[in-house]
Image 1 (cartoon, one colour):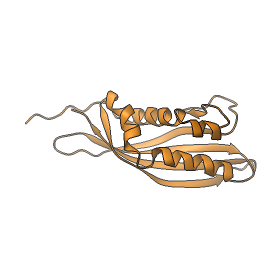
Image 2: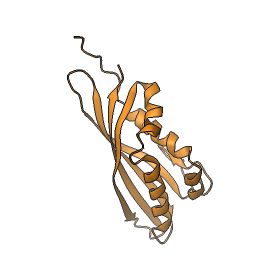
Image 3: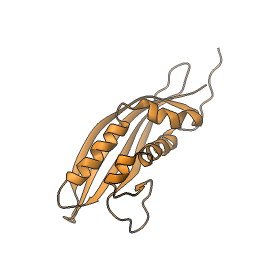
Image 4: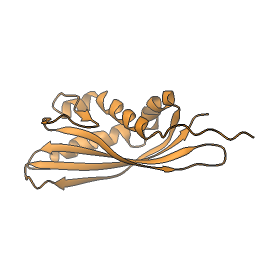
Length: 149
């Protein structure tokens, strides 16, 4: 029995997959003011609303024959509004695009040497910024990936 060789962490690939899936969605683009406003790092002075695919935590989820990772990925929806409605609408659409949508993420991961086993939305939290005009929704997704051999 040969031991598989571990490749690089798929966390960066997961982030790429999230950006690709979200930017490809027409209804989300409409909610973002007709812009492809999904970023790893938004440009300085970016107009609201926008989505930032941000922090992640990646932990080993290996077995004796393969390498896997459990990844939590955080997305932040930023709006400039006095209510949560706009952010809630955007967050809801993101949930529809990613929660339990293994095939969408898997299509981006496979060419990079990994597959998506599961993906689920853990939470969506609405927050008020110290600036009362700015709202933030924090979404956290949990994924299990497996390295392709």
